[in-house]
Image (cartoon, rainbow over all chains, first blue to last red; front, side, top):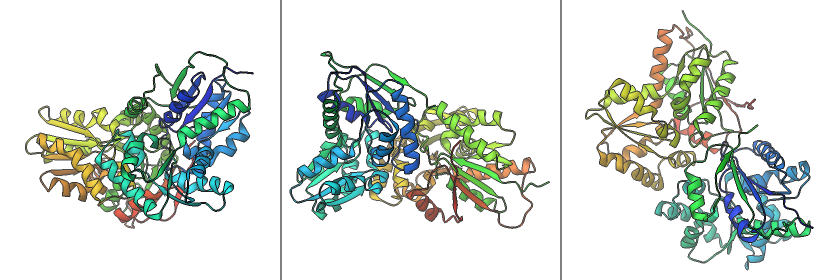
Length: 267
Length: 267
């Protein structure tokens, strides 16, 4: 059994392209439709109810493109809307939280895991909950890092100001003794180098984009939804508002190639 | 002639409260209805078409509260939507660009003015256009400062990281020789102290909030719309999504008092 329909991937903006990049590497024959809600980005500071409403609108837009599965390439949405999306849509839905939580539990040696993300993600406690469901003894220290997304979108990936902000956010987690750190926002893999520099290799980083791509692969196999094509799949990128500066930053940093970007208005 | 109806003030989020603060000080007897679009903040990175659509929705919500005038307490909206709002609504509309541009022209000695703001405001060239219409010989150097709003919303009003970011943004403008700087974003008055510290008093700051309040006063007098009451006017604050951390930052920094905040869903 195989299935050439596209996988629908969505995010509040452009950060989810880190998940697309990981999926392109791991699942090169799949067709992908990416939808970024740049008209209403960022979701991080918004309330769970608002984020849920937006998530359903985006998922509906991708279902109209005949998506065989939905990938929520956004920690904020994954943290508050996954059960709702699973209930509303008849296709498998994969988020970024469960795969990241699982990978962190496998990586930790001392049972103390750090999580960084947007305010809404951290406040939701979704990572902590997902980890505790698997291992009730794990200790989780989390921290909202609201400045990291703006710094990334400004293209300051290797910059002294960014390094200082990272040091300030991560200092207390390091002092607290975490040995594993979940990058709980799809933007953050773009800061991997800067974070490694700050942590001086003391801590294992768990990249939610890569782990999400692995979870998608597993789901496709379990549900017999893989594309049978041996050609490279297509990547279609749509945004709800004209792309700004950050699209260039992300495309360059991720070395992603896609042709024109469709601007798809919200209903 | 007098008019007790409220003045409707709107912004993409909470930054416009700096304009409210200036209006409360200058026009204490007016009733004010503030509407902040926190469900879709920030407008800075969004396209002009999207910002125009949002502005009309917000203005309609305020008109339903029987506003006698509309104040656009947002540079991004003022830079792209003022003519449209003037055309659509039967009440006077005051923005922040014209008053700021006028004040800057009065302040400059060497005829070289700096403007800082969000990407959309700067890209629109609205300040430059407004200044040139009055004085064709003025020289304008402008710079988008996308990190300042996130830093302010994080509450880092007096912080070494913020000072460094300001120095980096303003360095080239200072080197260029501007003698006057327009704070072309309603958030920025909250950074006045930090900016003065960085500039070491060399440059005159033009605060768009204060100048907007003065323009509102003038308009009320010209159109005989002042409230005749001698009581302190009421301030009603509504947001399109639950308030986050920044409301506390703004309320404390501005020493504004208002009772409960209404959450008013978008249509």
